[in-house]
Length: 477
Image 1 (tube, helix red, strand yellow):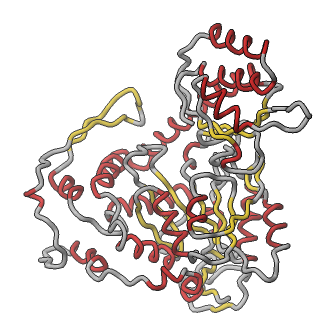
Image 2 (image 1 turned 45 degrees about the horizontal axis):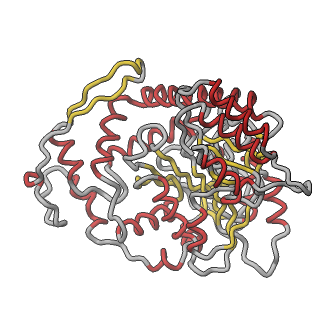
Image 3 (image 1 turned 90 degrees about the vertical axis):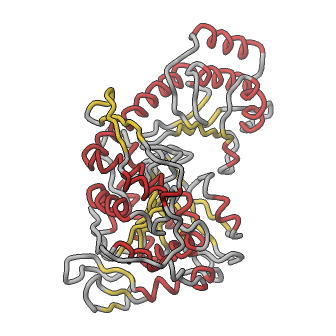
């Protein structure tokens, strides 16, 4: 494998080369290497000649006859006004009226990579949050939510029908992407401290010589969906070392980065850690505004090697052309007025909100599920992953699937049985955005006591489980 320094012509023949380039930056992989790793579909895509020239329309005084844009005067929308919270004082609201220029920008076609001002804002955020600067051999692009971008990254790297094995943590949302491409997904073990790097090393070092090694590892490093686990610094560094050694890309899906509320400082992201490694270019990072601004505006962004991000952009030009212009303008109008400090203040408030809900949920679990369920307390995100201790008459471990789908549902509780995302049957994922309690303890407790007083152990578990869920009113599952 050949790698090239970021800004000079130093060539190395060892992918695990140590040291830095003369400019102080870690060495990056060559364009030729990335091109060789693209899927057949990505290699066969051609550039949209019109969209590839849209950025030239930004030149002052230029008369463009390039694209067939409808005239904005024919659009029926004439103004857009809204309010947003002041991060310094969340109880107060600030009014916003989009200028005519902003409104026209939101109602018109825009570049495939995103509205330039929003792209630049996101570049600045990556420098503040992860210490990665523009011009260090990576590229950023906006998408219709991070899920849109993850799908495009996967199809850019994996060939449909390939007998490829792809590495993944326990996760439900992205599994269908790999299954659609007929990949054999190899599950890497996780625990309360996130992805187990020793499990990953064992898998890779014992990989059959007759099979090609995986191209990608998919991971959610903070508050993982579904386990709620946050990977430790040591494990992240070990995974980065394994990526260089075994040549796989890390798909760092990080929608819960700003929802960290653990007692220790937040560990750096893979994207941040990579800059200080002997070599960069193995991390493709996905950020989302869904959990901190609005899930409905569908705005996310990808940061990664230029060749791979360009392949994703080429996918967009033949699929959805671009991310939603109006959603981008709404996000930009808010973020530009807040500034980075306001954004970080706001996300700190959001993290504290979920921490309080986690604490309330944890207290209810300790009070009512101790001895009949096992769990680890999450340090980030929105998920509580636990195991119901269900025993059958013959002493074997019981199956949570049937009781979750019948008994719990009959009592007004909907949860995700563990078998949907892994083989262990008695584990359950709860997406816990808990609002304030709306039902009295006495009524719920009476139901739980009655259930376990005359029905078997599985129903006792669900009875107590249902009480905890129902006692807090509304939850997301």
